[in-house]
Image (cartoon, rainbow, N blue to C red; front, side, top):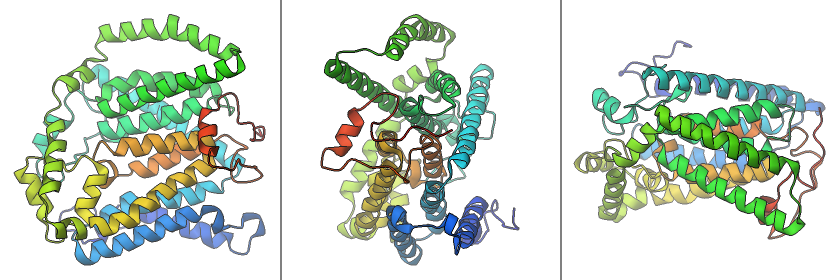
Length: 422
């Protein structure tokens, strides 16, 4: 594509950047140029200042990695550079454009649900597997045996990515299912996504979704005790769970839907041991390595010795070991700022998606590898933001308890949010 020699091993450093990343950068540049001088499409960067801050910090990390570390340009460009560009463009979408984006995301999720059921029924993958071998990408057969045995991935490319994105979609859908015109489609896809969840074998994502469900239940009970009223929606959901979800879960268990998940709990192929080995490698590292990063390339050798070929499956720890404390002190606050931008644009849904995403990447290699996961999370989140809610014309609550108060609210819409426009 575009004449880029991407798939061969002898490609240059710039050719190892995915062609889609170049297309995103070109699209963003055209979008900026077209908005210059057009009052109807004026872009106020102050409204997306956290995106700009994140982009600047990522550029500094990129310059440091290219100067002192080897082979990091493509990884940072593909995994870290694209999300803020998507976020800035989608921040200024019109309601009509958001409807189109939402329809595309729902269609993508629906297609994934169908493909995942196909993979579960046939026992074969629809697309070739994506390997996350951190040390040696030539270890294809070993990676296939340990990563994909009985686990579906759909169009997401990898079971762990599928688990994370399904978690993000479920959180966003549950928070906003009654706030846009695609309510019935969203509820149907929510049920389908929950049904496919166990086939990924992503224990951490399922645990996080269980914690989120517990939070939603606690929030509901809190609001009921405060208002002493129960909505008709809550009654309907209760009966659906009792007479629909529970019997469906029993039938699914008999069909073997949960077998993959149970197998992962019984035998994780050394996943837990690799995380413990990563901590041991970190503790045994020299202060210079922790401070400056993997300048001498010793991290890969230590991973081979520690038998952790799939990398450091804790994002925060892996980032420090790869790029050093200096870059981490710059990048981590910018990442939190980007999540705050998501909260500003998406309200309660944005906050819950941000928390779920930060928790999900803490238990895997996630965005530390070369992946489009971060960009997909941003697209999913912004697509689900209710039409009529966003940066324009909304009076937001201030004060130290604003975030907590928003998280405890529930109902058809936020009290300070205008009614959705159709």
